[in-house]
Image 1: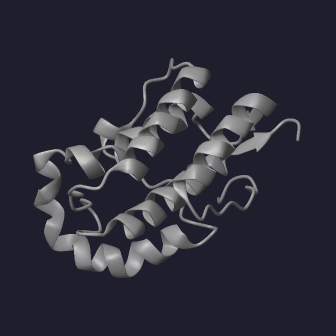
Image 2 (image 1 turned 90 degrees about the vertical axis):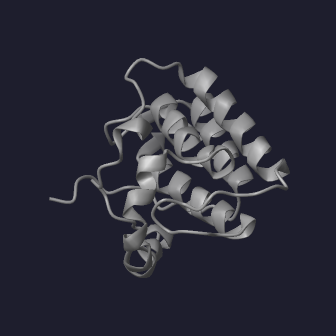
Length: 155
């Protein structure tokens, strides 16, 4: 079973993703998935920040899978109907009790940090080395994937 019909989201930039999270906080939302807005923003930060800070070393054990993941999974992530139900590593699973407003603020700070960073970007554990523009597109698509599970209550 595919689950509920989700809204179609696409972000051309991480700034758009941050604004969408802020809009959901301001409008209120109805969750159609398992995570709240705060949990989604925490997850997005946990996955995004290692682009600058580095991923856990054990994740490089799967580097041999990168060509297949880049060929098969990356295009699916960029589609507006990316796959549901793919389990994430426990290090990237948010706790249950997080504050939506605080997590949106921290997500916006993470976005600003990413956008202003001009140094080295660590290889993504699933997709390998990517430049800043490619990583921004990846993180923006990842944000759209998760934020589509939240339906704004008022426009």
